[in-house]
Length: 305
Picture 1: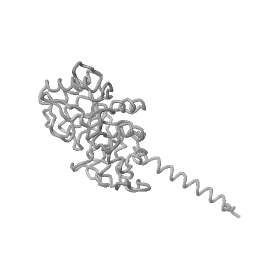
Picture 2: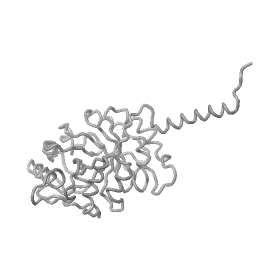
Picture 3: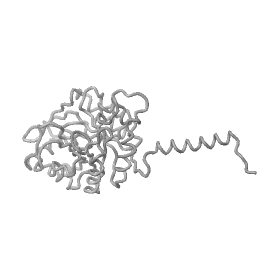
Picture 4: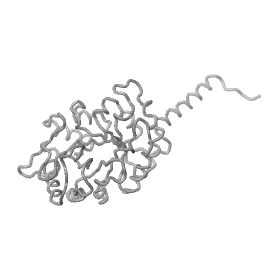
């Protein structure tokens, strides 16, 4: 006669199976290359909290200060951060760096007060970035963050033309050992920065799959996203590529209670398993700290990134 397990043995076996299922779900999509690298943009809303607060959440491995939004033709940004008090930002930069968090300064943004129409403009802006925000200290150059130096420069060139000299700017900064990243729009290639990216000097590209472009990932729609992602990873195979997402377009309502992962099922089941197939997948970039703080978006995405 075949032996039968006692009820206690059956319960233990079922518990073991349930544990394995939960563990697999928490581990992320099958066959995914996970890095747990999450980058966030900070500086666009005074209600997002301080830079130190953002770093102390331990959600982010990189924080990008945005934006150095006035440059070219003899004009330079002097530190407007949407109402944030500049007096404490320098100390916050050092605090974040002491915790092993990379701090970058992003140039450009959504405004129209920047351009690089000539080689001389590129040289002048490179000098200003070096002396005002990086390792330089030229007499008479205003440093908004005091003696704090950011770790590198991000190119977030939303406006302008393909003839602007961002390749020359990248080359001049790279000569000084400055780390470079870029945050282009999702349509590949983004002609505003393509010449710069083709130099091979950028260690990371955060592709912006949000906003008004057709390839944006909004509320679960993956139409066009994977196709453009594959173009980016193939075009720049030696550069890490990050999936740029907007917390405000995630479908997570402000102040959502409980497990917000239920709002992100399309990201988890459909998009991340596809983008993480790329050998040069680097992680997730989140726009921006203000919306991320309201939705709790990165608290979930970090475990999947």
